[in-house]
Length: 145
Ligand SMILES: [Fe+2]
Image 1 (cartoon, protein in one colour):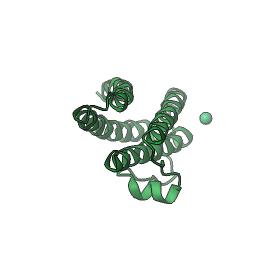
Image 2 (cartoon, rainbow, N blue to C red):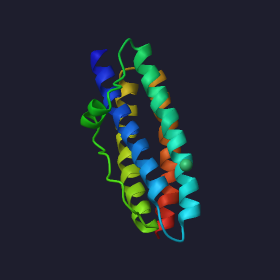
Image 3 (tube, helix red, strand yellow):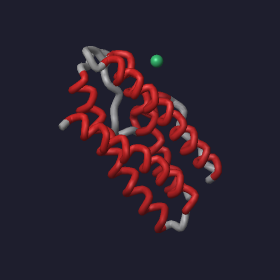
């Protein structure tokens, strides 16, 4: 069980840092696509904040403690916080492509891990996250063509 909690804390940390990075892109996107991307990225971080909450609450259900220290979250996460600076549309879309591709593969791997452990509650949470991220990834990739 300890192992499950560590796996979920690491995943949750990535979702939390990604949410923080999405705020950065939301605030700092510049150029002709500002209106569309600013709005779209707000939808992303609102969803990521819900994902963060559902993973943290699942950790509680498994009798663990979700990491809440921002320093520890940053340390635990594979995705790292980004500097606050201007990002044009192409940079924003490439960052999103990179992060959402990583999260798609990461989420798929964990679904397999939790299915093998017969923890379908957790794999269902992850499935819902995957369905959102993978669909948005298609839209991001289409925008980059
Ligand atoms: Fe906003």
